[in-house]
Amino acid sequence: MDEAGDKMVTTQDTARQPRPQKETGKRGPCATVKFGSAVVPIYRTESRGRVRFTLCYHRDGKRLRQIFRDLAAAKKEAQFVAQRIQSGMQQVTDIKPHEREAYVAAVRLLEKSGVPLVAAVEDYVRAREQAGTESLAAMATEYGKVFKKVVRRASTAEIVDEMLRQREQDGSSRAYLRLLKTTLTRFAAKFPGELIAVDSHQIDAWLRSLGVSHTTRNSMLRCIKIFFSFARSRDYLPEERDTAAGKLKITKVVTDNMDIFPPETMAKLLHAAPTDLVPILAIGAFSGIRMAELNRLDWSAVDLERRIIELRAGQAKTGSRRVVPITDNLAAWLNPLERKGLVVPTVKAQHRAVAALAAKLKIDWPRNVLRHSFISYRIATVKSADQVALEAGNSPAIIFKNYRELTTEEQADKWFGILPKPGQFEASATHGRRPRRITRRRAAAK
Image (cartoon, rainbow, N blue to C red):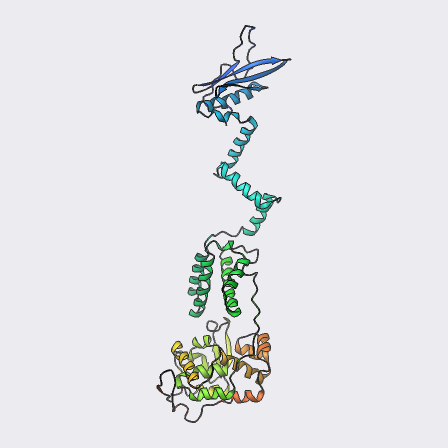
């Protein structure tokens, strides 16, 4: 509050001490402070050689007095009292002068921030309760170091939408996008607030509450890890520390013995297969290419002269180019086929037809059985986990741990010795839920 006050009027010059009063029967005020119609007198008194200045005013029908050592302080208080009397807030005049000065100072400190004093005090009290004995300034400094690069705020669902749009623009496969969308949509529904507020314990508890298998839970956690990494790269999370998902470990899954086909079963399948199913069965069994990679493969990548299949970075699961050798028996299966366009032009229909053919022949169809079979027989032939890892697009450690010594070299020779039977591409076969005749025609070589 300005010491000069609003509309302050005094009966004496404020820069000079009042003239001594004549000794009369009754002394008047040495100064008077007015604000509107409110008047507050100030009296000068002496006691044992000490001069004092007294304010006199009425509140709630009672006469009140305040004593000060100097006239300037008395006038300042009188101004405050007069203003409150005029505005009908006489009850506030019982605040002590030092308390009022602290109030005025606090309001001035908050002027730039625009935060009301009450809100600032409430925020401070909450922070103090959470901080305990720690210094709030030190905690704020540390928070600034960690979160200074978090310049964007958004809900989990908004970040999920942004990531899916980016992945789609970058040409990610439909299967990959579908996996991300399925997992992250469920995650956003569980944690709809800001991603920065989600911690690792909450993520782990949610994944465990779903009641899914270890493999499925690991798959979902990988998607969530990718999502948190994306959020950090877009400044939704701080760079200086691990993300909440990054702190979680993939659950170790005990791998049972790999299901593989014996050579006799594979020969039975191939010799009964119609022409349109031969590429799926033969390439899967004798090159180890993943089904998802095979679905994206074009015949232009199959070079029978050089005996290689080239998987481009965008086709391979690992995102890196891979060259797979074509064995002699695989070349024999592919050479009679018409090799134009996609290797698997109708993905769903042809894969369903493969499953139907296996069912008709009463052959169980374990997941990834063709790939597992190829890797097992291939390592038995070449005796090198490193070489098989390069061909299959896997790590040598996984190859050595899961596929070594599952079969013998003699069995491997039989596997890679499976050839088309005489008249293979002129014969006919029936398969499927409804018996139907499928004619296999000899296709002109490319």
